[in-house]
Amino acid sequence: MAVPANAFLYLTEHGNVVVQGEPLVTGFAVAPPFDRAALEAALRADQAGLTAFPEFVRGCWEAGVVWYEVDLLARTCTYHGADGASYREDYPAVTLPG
Image (cartoon, rainbow, N blue to C red; front, side, top):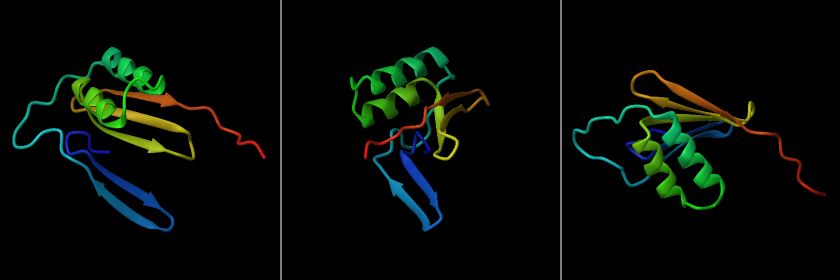
């Protein structure tokens, strides 16, 4: 996801899809510095159900995240700042009942 543009690119074996949301910024904007603590706070709030997706994306931007990549096979999400800093979150496998 390109965070400031609020744009998603899904790469799948069945074809690639782009989804364009409402941009967070337009024109020129200074990318905030990467702030891992602020990012983790936004992640935990979202995981606890305290924010909806638009607020989570805004929190990522305010924490200096300019893009993030989800790897469903590796069960990771890596958040990247404009300065090259990054943070990777690992997720456990989920077993569905039945």
